[in-house]
Length: 602
Image (cartoon, rainbow, N blue to C red; front, side):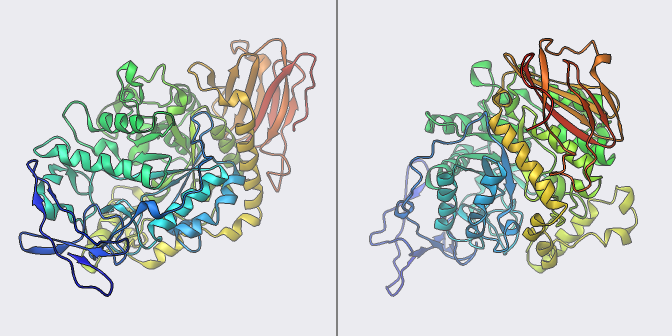
């Protein structure tokens, strides 16, 4: 059924093909026309592969001609794995407008910050007007509350012209609970398995060939029609597939084959620490380009803020464990997990560090907290600055979550917009999730957890951009810009071969990160807690280049980065620096030839 503005309704019966699919050509249809399907006398239903749902996921689908958009990004060459820095954002809360156009207005800021790609949380259309996006049902259609398909294209096009990439978060492990019309066309989309959120997608049962192709085509749709630069694959541990080759292996191969001359990263969210996922195909792996390696976040959160419940039970958060995590890429390589009550992880030896995506904050690690509070709100600012310097100098791929660069005070809370009955279930379930935490054993305490259904919960999660101009936020923002500029400009920080970095716990509170390439060496000396002295003359066991001296690049206690600066005392005249910290901080050093300049920073 095709609904044309000012014209009569067009109807046509589709012909069944031998493979069980239906097809037909309807003459006279134009972009902007709206259409729906009837099946066995039921309906009308929107198209499960609709490119746009202007009236919401229950309304008619709109015909979209992707070739009508005039792209201007011909000079864009794509992302580089050596320099990738990801900035994760939620379109609805990133800007005051909460739209693709609003995000586009902030691209110059992001370019100046020093990130190289933005990562959009899922934009596939969902029921209601506000959501994190992980309950999408119109998998091919940008959410109409953020704008039109061309609004998303304009965002990507502008980003490319400025030199920024755009990665999209996609959800292939389940459909959202409301507005999923794929099931109306075939029950073969649904697996018999259940995930924490809904029925799993059928990837290995009867009819799974078509289901797999549906999601592979979805990935190619976003990459081709919207010129996106890569995909983040949500919760791949919930992609249950016992067939061979695994769906992820097929998806990765198809995408890489589709873009042979360009790096188009596929990055998985997966807590299992499976090396097979990110090993190259020639080494027997699936060749995914990256995986969210959350062990670094968990170790740092445990160390800095003391979190010890839930999955934090698996971490001691010691300086030694943090160093091990940095050196390996993840911490768990087969040890028994207390939280999961089973062994977790595999040995990632030999894998390029860039394939591990690490963070101090992301949407999950902030939003899955009861009140959506951020790391810097639970620790002292000097420690946060020191942790940031360590984090942004790692050889792993860093991911920042919107607002962390200036220490945003706005939380990022879990918000939804379901109908009254489902909304009540979601609110009760959200609060029940925290019943095992000591702070929420009392039911009255759980009632204080923000209601996901309340519009105020969504509004509270919007960034307040005026903060970035005020202290101490402005100083923290300057530090992030300086660190990301350094990461971009220092060639030694682009080195991504295994064996070119080492982290060492110098004592219970301090770490040293070394990075090197040829004769170039870079050091981060980070005191993450308390005060103390790092005297590398006392650590003859640590190898340092003997014919080098050190130049101070910056400290996190420089006046431009701390409104109440307490600079450490530095002695970098010889090959083994001495640093005396009056409080938490980090010192960044780079090597210079023995007869070259040393001392003060740049």
